[in-house]
Structure formats: structure tokens, C-alpha cells
View (tube, rainbow, N blue to C red):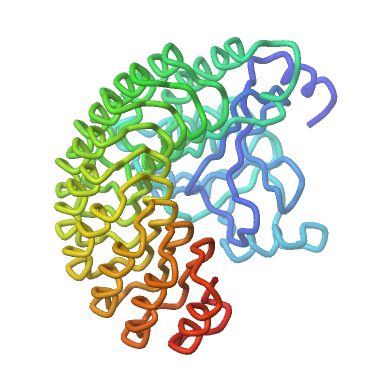
Length: 438
């Protein structure tokens, strides 16, 4: 692209950068478009990080488009594109399209009725165009490709605008993107998002019906923001990953989120850690977790959950057949809460990772857990550190370790178990030495 075109492109309202090929990926395809909110560089239709030069790629599986391609540009096999991406200087089989060919291609694709465009574009035929034209850009927009949207940290860290002003810019960009692509991943962590921003974000999420991954950790949406988001997430039936870690949503915010989880049948990863949900919030979540049949990862650490909340969660865990990772560290379940889990752990057939560290379970809780560990056939990682189990708790666990054939990692550090307790545990341990932390 010449200097005059560069000047024109810079003057356009190009506030995002698109990446069609993820880094470290050898095969070029149009499975995702990557946006970085806030970037003000010259707009690239597509940017191949492996080739380090501007390019445009279109993957077409539409019969009408394929029929029109030979008239304007010869098909380039995907293998040749991959080879060119690996070493562009030595690629002799790929030729950039001329401006005339580019315009013909755009015109032929634009002629296809909107209702005929498929929603998923697998990498079938890929065409490389050296420069970006408005016609081709419009065609790609018509494809409504899946998009991964992340906050540009360079934009966020740049001085000159307040956090509120930057978030306003980001929200405007997001709203614009919903018209030209299908946002499937949205990551906005650590951007000081408050209730009012969560409300605006909810207006965007309503239009993101194919959203799969949402990461809003380390913000300040509080209870009201959780309510706004919950109202929008009900439209996201494909949601599989939800991370609201450290947002201070409280028990009422947890109740709002719980109210919409039943509509997210694909949810596999839920992180509500460090949100002060307490026993009340845990109880609300427990009421709907049974309907999240795909849930495999549940993180509720740092939430002030006591014996009551532990009892509510324990009652529903056997119904979460896919649950493999449960993190309850730094709560207050105590010996009574540990006993509640003892009664159901054997029924959690998929559970492989359990973290109950910093929960004050004491020697009594350790003794009760020891009695059931041998029945947890899939349990590979158990963290009971900083639980005041003492020598008595260590002795109880040592007596059952021989039955835990799948256990590969056991953390009992900061428990004042003494030299004798450590020796007993090491003698009973069947896994690798590095897997036992004392």
C-alpha cells in the first residue's frame, strides 16, 4: 500500500486491529477474527503475525462464490498458503492479486444474497490479497466471522484519558463490532469496570448470542453490575466460560448470576471467587448447579463460605456429573463443613482436583476426609494446606494413603504435623516424592 493510501487509512475511524491467524498456528484459516479494543493503528483487514506483513484472506465454501472465483483469481491450495506463511520470501507459487482482480472478487462475493451466507466458514479455499480494499472489507464483514475481542493493554496503560473515558471508547467499539462479526470471546479484565459500565456492556451482550467465553475478572461491578450482566447472559445459550473473579458482587449478585445459569446449558467453567458471596450466595448457587450438567470447573475461593454454605454445595455436587475441579480454598467451612463433603465425595466420580486449603478443618475434619479418600477413584490433586490438622490429622491421612491409587499431588504444608507425622506420611505415600508437599 503506497504512502497516500496509508494517509487515507490513518484518517479513517479505524479503532481496532484484526488478527486472522493466532500466533504459533501454522495453518491459515478464517475461523476467527481477533480484535484489540482501543488500538489506533492503521486498520488491517487481516494481519498474519507469522509473515509480519499486511495481507487479506478470505475463505469461501459458498457454491456461488466458488463458481465466481476462477474468473477473477485462481484458487490457491491451503498447503501453499501455509508454506508461504512459514517463509514468505521463498514462496514462488503464490502471487498477490492485482487491484483489478481484487475488485472483481469483491464484486462477485457482494452479489451473493445476504440470506445465502453461511454462518460458519471452514478453511476450504483461501485467497491472499496484498492490500485491503473497502469492497473486500465489506465482504468479510458480511461473513460475520467469529471474533475474539480483548482489551489492548497499550491503549489502557496510555496516559491522557481517565479509566471511565477509555471504557466509553471500548463500549462504543464493542457495539460497532456486533454489527460486523460474531463475538465469541470477550476479555476485559482489570479495567476498573463499575456498575454503569456493566450496564452498557449488558446492552452489547444481548446481541452476542454466540458468546462462548466471558472474562471480567478483577473489576468493580458489584451487586448492581452483576444484575445487569445476568439479564443479558440469559441470551447467551452457548456460554461455556464465565469468570467474574474479584468483583465484589456479594450474595445478592451471586443470586442474580445463579438465576441465569440454568439457561446456560453449555457452561463448563464458572469462577466466582473473591466475591464475598457467603453462605447465602453459596446456597443460591447450589440451587441451580444441578442444571449445569456440563460444569467441569467451579471456583468459589475467598468467599467467606461457612458450614451452612458447605452443606448446600455438598448436597448438589453428586448431581454435577462432569465436575472435575472444585476450588474452595480460603473459606470457613470448618470440621462440620468437611464432614458434609465426606458424605458425597465418593459420589463425585469425575472429581480430580479438590482444594480445601485454609478452611480450618482441624484434625477432626482431616480424619473424616481420610476415611473416604480411598473411594475417590479419580482424585489426583488434593490440597489441605494450612488447616491446623496437626499430628493426629496427619496420622489419619497416612493410614489411608495406600488406598489412594490415583492421588498424585497432596499438599499438607503449614499444618504443624511434626517430624513423626511427616515420616509416617512419606512412608505411606505411593506417588512421586515431589507430589507430597509437607
